[in-house]
Length: 261
Length: 263
Image 1 (cartoon, each protein chain N blue to C red):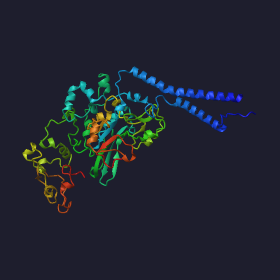
Image 2 (image 1 turned 135 degrees about the horizontal axis):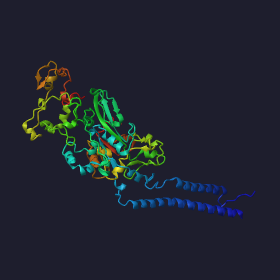
Image 3 (image 1 turned 60 degrees about the horizontal axis):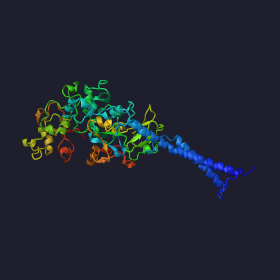
Image 4 (image 1 turned 30 degrees about the vertical axis):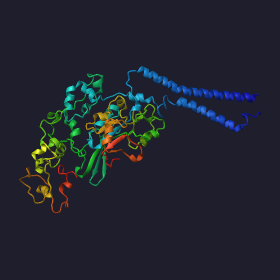
């Protein structure tokens, strides 16, 4: 008889345990749903932003860039990026291809304070500026390697970092083929270009696009029918950085030189 | 010692035991998952959906030129009529959200008056695109602040553009920083007067042979006096032997006449 009671107790306990676990798992999302509806109730005047209706990208017209560095400066101001010259969400590189076809790339202080003339101007075969930033890849390697799910691609195609949840392991910084990420020295979390998510969700332009004096940077919808970016994609020959990696960047370059890496 | 017997029907003992361990493990995993998985994780994908409102709510610093123009109409109108029409106010004046949106009296945006502020964009750099208006800092009214002659909101100099550069500004601006800066357009081109009305029907003349360039650049040509309206004294004009230099190519197939020192 003792055997049978044992078994019955055991089965009952297993059932109880499973049931309670299931209840907890089911109730969790319901609780957050309730919270979400509370949030919505407290902010009725907030403008409705539907992330599923957008898919953002940026165009960079190389032959327009004058290397003034206003974009890099505005980015630091808008997003509180530390002013030290090795933390950047966006920066400008200068490519100089000399008469021997050697490629020299420099970006003093990210191009933030402009560039000084190169030493030997006579030896230049060609030279140009290349603004760089996070490419907001459609297949982002940084998202793939994040062990905790702290970096992600939103519904509107922007790759963001959840800085409260990031553990600062730097895997994403290693994985990014474009060197677009850095570890924020105060937040101890990965940081990168967000297309100024706080601005674009309010219908404003990213800070770098706003201040660019020559319209080198074009922001808009990749899938949208009428946006400056869509027009650029229609009219110009578009290239992306490191297409062989199949990251499918959403930062699109025009007049990109083959030497640009 | 009594032997424990968990057998259910004909299922063997060991299968029941391992099944039990498996179910317990599953339950444990579910409970742990519930406690460690943050709220809203997985709602939209493999991340916390709740992180997005926080990122959306980050403070703004740039107001946008439309906001500036709502109060500073005069400046905006002036800017919109000139070469700086595509510039945002905050490109030069710096982030002004606090001034433009929060409280106009709280802070005043930066007003750059120094020469360096303009040279950030307009100082000559060989990497800049051809035709972008640039100056050689040491030659273009050195030490004078730019705002003495140019209004930054409408920066065209008061002098009206000469006939050619009105349309061919890109060439004029490139030539202005080249060794050919002192040459007039007419030195090499003659345009019929009708060119101004019907530019494509009445084309200006261009040099057609090597000898034209050779008037200045071939060996044995004069080195003093004036030639084609240019004073040759103390000018170091590069000279080549037209017989041997450059094979049968025309000069402008290798040298761009509006910027001859470029390679």
